[in-house]
Image (tube, rainbow, N blue to C red; front, side, top):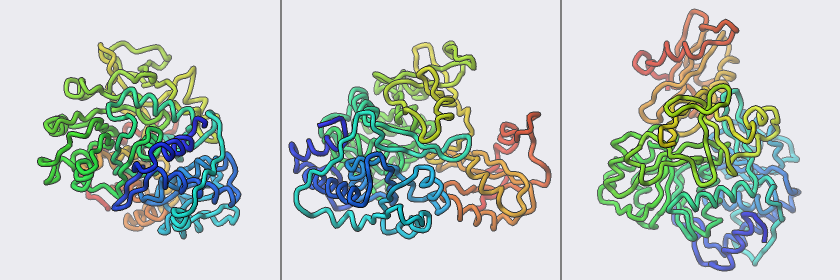
Length: 502
């Protein structure tokens, strides 16, 4: 056995074959079935020409087949590339080209999209229907061995400088994340249960919903989409011990009619991040015996670098803890010297969970990871007791419902629309998702046509909800760059002054 996810599947298949691994809707897959199903899937990919280190994409909404396909790709020795199911053809083509995909596992709803985006016949498309046909069959132990340092998946995440960047994860890195989580999280132990109502294609879905429970022989209840009343029912019915989400997830569960009567006593780790947590929400869940714990982290740092301890969840609700067992943070000045308590500076993170770098981008890797520390581009403050408080983003990312959106990616689509002279995309407040994109445009354009143009080339959550037309040039810095800070200040009250366009 080696330090791989496939080793864990095989072990639990032998030692607790009847135990549930995944639940979806009314379907349950036990470890014995999972072991053989993923091995047959890995053999199929190998027979199609997928070799060790080849990149295999996977696209589709949450389903039972998604994690099975993902694990089959890992057992084939491939590097998995989860793809957002809301990508347009343009976005999918860009990511596939950057990753150099050898094959794509696609839900029936996405097969036509994949074939249009990837017309090269050398890139194989494998339908989820084909994977489903492999669920039944004889025992199979096919698995391609990889090393602890082998890449196992690449998660593409939006950056502040343009198109999404591929964050690399190795076997050892992922196992270190799992081990550290077991020391930090009360819920993470052999056989624990996880509720996943988030998309599988993002890091929390892939890591917390698929990989980590498998390593510990646990089970994940996967939801097709988030429904607050149903989520409460699943927590109660399956004695869920761990859940994660943005504040909106917990707010909507708390507002559900069944929240007051729901038995949530099994929930030992409730992680929240992506936006500030309202104090009244902490108390609402605290009255049910559940401590919502705020985290700070990013994909490049393995998701969670530091989390508020259960003891501090109410006493220090605006902080994110003081690090983890092996993961550390610093808050530094421009010269990389440590800030004094209360002094704002850039957050740096370090430890075994930090990515070895960005896929195919040594320049960005060298710029981001220096002297063993990942420079996050985020602004934070450390209090006198060493707790971190997140202040703001030095980057221009928009975080909408916990999803990172690159303004430059949206700007690059809008600026190519006829009549647009200049554009700057900024975040504005949104009562439901925290932030939403707003486009400040100089030019002579039809707003409805512009929105339709964006919908053709961007996932729906990236399409601006506000478009402000100006008849004067955008303000600029002496260097010639657009003055983003001034634009954000001038238009911070867009929701009060302008109608939404969608």
